[in-house]
Length: 397
Image (cartoon, rainbow, N blue to C red; front, side, top):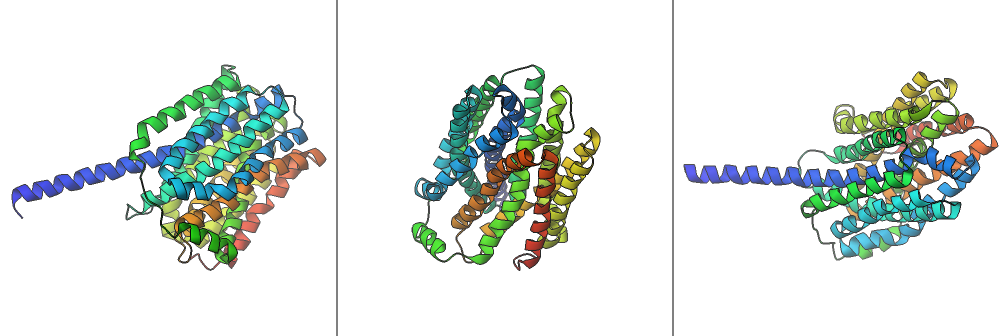
């Protein structure tokens, strides 16, 4: 090959690799924006509970506004992503998702908080499907698995959001002003990365596939959704109740209330970045089986040893356990041989995020009837259920 052609070819590959890296970074930052928005809300739940003088049952009732918004969005979220494309839908819905935060922080009465949470759940459902679809499209540009890193970015954002919340709590900044800062940050992420988000066209048969699937549900795909349901229920409970647990059970002083949530997020973020490596070395079945057992062990440790340091370790175990569930399940669904990727992700993500949002209100009602420690003990069974279901699914190796 002539020197000029070789040089041109090398430059072309360099430019291509740099562009792909930038596309991957942009997709990761959209995942980050979603995680940061949710973590901003989760880090201030104890403060909002105190400001509105809510009991555990009242908080649990209001938290139902989130899954209600999720349920309302389910029938049309997949259609929106299919019709308008995941690129445009990601832009608009991530902006609206973060824009709900100031509404939540502005609430002074319960109905205002419920409305803000309802809109937060509605926009979050569409945003989740759109951004995860972008993740699948970006994965197709690479020869190596990278889906775990996208979900790792979401978890890393959770840690970063918790850290920001910890700082703002220390400076006694109100939730409203905190959420305005978070919204501005997400707007900046969208503006600086929008042009690198992949533009794709939906297949003409997408609508037909959507309807035919729900008339004839694929059982392995539904089982994947159920496994993810229990994993994300455990995850959602840690998001919404870890701060309350540290405040009311551990009696952590001041800003240390956010310490349990922070350690959980650190562990989950690290686990997701390790997910691809662990699966390659030990296989999906073994990783998921062990992850379920670790979730249960961590939750029961927090119940049996309600002290600051033991609970920090326990919440880190729960974080590591739940870290592998979503990347593995979403990857398995996205590579399903009988169901189109977009449809498969819509089904699994809808079922799983329903668990993510239903679990926290369930804790509130159980805590009101018994205690917060007993309700955490009940949720500890979810990890065992995950392991049992994984052992019965033949999709994993």
